[in-house]
Length: 141
Image 1: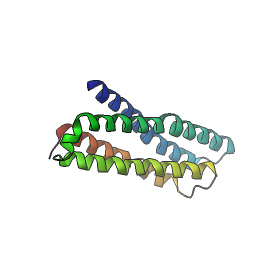
Image 2 (image 1 turned 135 degrees about the vertical axis):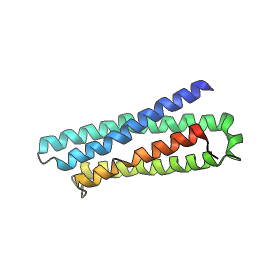
Image 3 (image 1 turned 60 degrees about the vertical axis):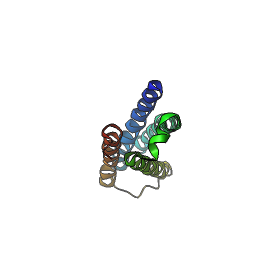
Image 4 (image 1 turned 90 degrees about the vertical axis):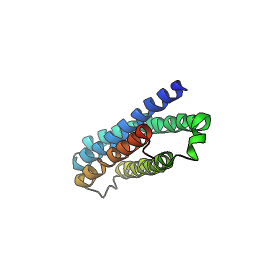
């Protein structure tokens, strides 16, 4: 069981590293005016999203569902913290999909957002991380 938890945490860290870094790339991409720079950012964003973030998300979910099936399902019925954590994860997956939408907009040179917008967007995963970690470790209710 501890191996499942370890793998879940490893891939969660991997996923969050991408969730923190991709919007930062969007900040710099939105500020870039030269074609070579824009093409470089497109490659970096694509590799980060499809090579690190998405596999990290999928494996985080796989090991999380595995743990839920093995021992946490009993807790699910009586643990409010777990309900909220799972809701936050669904919202985080939605944020991941928004990152894909923005990645595709940059890919097709159709981005309409400024670097300031992406600076604000870059902060969103912090709130998810704090809430999910507190819920999973403190289990306040």
